[in-house]
Length: 214
Image (cartoon, rainbow, N blue to C red):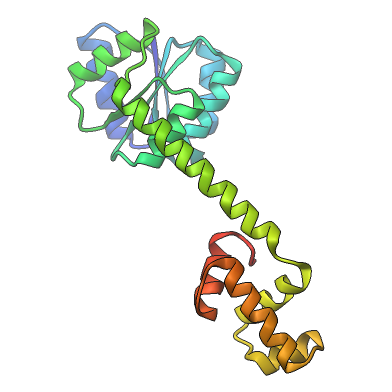
């Protein structure tokens, strides 16, 4: 059983390497501190398991794990992180990770997780997976709703939204897009209604959330 350790904290990485390798007899295929090195070593050393840190200097461990699994589907990726965030866990599972451990987990538990992952087991409890699937459905529905809102804005309304983001009042918007004051006010009202807000500031903030403003 060969394990690749990916973590940008040298002390933690070396400690894990020492305990897993020297004391527990697990073969350490290598250590990496960046996404680039992790992907390269995964190609070169053919590990059975990758213990992958979530936050790396040059990118996300989740994304690195997904790319490694795309090239080497037989490798098991176990995320190792400082804190559990539901979205991170969901992203890790969607990327193909079979486990998600805290760095505060005891070394014996990490070693056991490595052995189970190498044997092809899913380390995330079934109840957690059910909850993650529920979260995914909710997130997908929210994204679909957001996409519908964004698509509902006409080109003219997007112009008005840009003016609103620039803190232009109704008169300023009317002058900018060359319409009457009444028409500009109607556009502003339509934008707020479509974004589900009651104030201009809230509409601008909502538009930023949807990525409608640069």
